[in-house]
Amino acid sequence: MIVWGWLVTLYLFLGGLSGGLFTVASFLYLSGAKKYERSVKWISYWAWIIIAAGIALLVVDLGRIERAFNTMLYPQVASPMSWGSLIIVSFLIISLAFWLSFTRIPSRLLGKGIGGALEKLLKSLRTPLAVVGTALAFMTGAYTGVLLTYGRPPAWTTPALPALFLASAIATGYSAAISLGHDELEKAGALVISSKVESVIGILELAAAIVYLVAVPQSFRSVLLDFSGLFGLLFMAIFLGLGILVGEIIIPSIESRKSSANLMKLSTVLVLLGGLVLRYVIVFAAQVV
Amino acid sequence: MADVEEPRVGRREFLSAVTLGLASAAALPSLISPVSAEEEGRRYAILYDSIRCIGCNACSVACKTRRGFPHGVGMVEYELSPTNWVFVEKVGEGPVMLRRSCMHCGTAMCQLVCPVGAISKWNGLVHIDPTRCIGCRYCVQACPYGVPKFNDGYGWGEHAPPGVTRKCDGCYEFVKEGKLPACVEVCPAGALKFGPRDEIVAEAQRRVAEYGDAWIYGLDQLGGLGVIYIFKKGFDPVASGVFPDVPSSYPDRVSYGPVAVALAAIAGLLTALFGFFKGRGSK
Image (tube, rainbow over all chains, first blue to last red; front, side, top):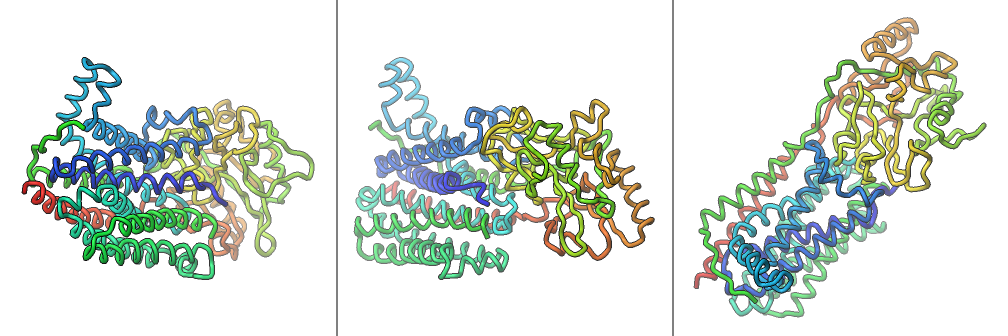
């Protein structure tokens, strides 16, 4: 029986993607602000938009939407979802504040007095926002997996799952981020190393996927490895094949020799598709197998 | 776009901050380690004697009647639902009578995972507050016995409003008033008994000694269950697949060591990246 469906699946994907995006934005800012200024702004913009969309999906999925704020009113030290709610809301606030610090929006909305003061404050807080936001981004990425480990399906109760989801979060966020920041990275001569790093991330994610396959019960492993079934086909062909092998390892290795914006976009599309398919397979297959 | 100032942070400071963040992330799971069974003044339990049970399902009907849930003659539901909190089914050879309902676990996973504290205990009886439940269904996913059920249909009064999760609450509000749980009250075969858990366990042991070919389930699982089962020897609900194989306590099923290792590995990767971009940025 499907208890958690598409809305939760999409949230798990978007939460990871947002965490990965913010991490890259934070690193670009902390490492060479002026060079990557435009990229930082764009990547952090998408980070908060995407986590906001993810949170909206979670709220819509609740049986009682009007009580969503109970997660803030009654925090539970023992509940992963309670911690997770606080983490993702904090992450939304921090990522939004970080993005706003690169804009004139506060003064446009609130006037030069209050808005200007807010702009100045946010600007002075950029570095702490970037650092705290990165930690929250990591927690958001890992939390999407930790959430499931307390579920009943044996395919979820392995600690290899949070590791795989975190690896996928970094992979999807990184791929999307370097596509968004392609022009500035190229201008800074950082495209080659960026592509090489993407390959390394792809190899790490592949390793995490193999560890997960080893860790799950034999019955679930058979489903994931069975090409004749829908879940096996999606996991093997789309996630492992197109997402990791083609999108994260083969195309980036080509890019590292010859820069191509189109190839990079294709790589990102495949990585994102793979990340979404991974969440779909893990969430749905575990509940029906 | 606003001017961007060079951040005033060195590699060492940044590494320290990231390490602190990652350590926090790695430590998070230990902070959310499951709660132990609550220390209560008294812990109640229900004895279910499968050998005495005749499978009439009067317990199921009585439960529905007390709660105002829909039912009728010959309409016993053999599946737990938001409006069907207990029933008896026949399983295996014999057949064996098996009560299906909340186990009122000593370490209740539903209570542990609930993000809003809507699930709590009163003297061992695990109950959901339908006015606080947000309908996230985490308890439905977490309960190893698959007991809590989400009401995605119409509401049935105060006991099963729409959009929330419901399950047997041990009739704790009625017990507070000195009444018995509805199922226990009507059992015509003496198969159900309610009382302090230590007395219920003693009664189960007495009956097992009397029967000779029986055994007890529920003494140790998940901190000790709040429903103590007596089965005839030769029937094992775990081996026959009707109950899950649960540990005596959580969190031994989940170890977060590999997660911490993965986080550390990524921290190393990011630090290397930082070093690179820092170098590029300073050129």
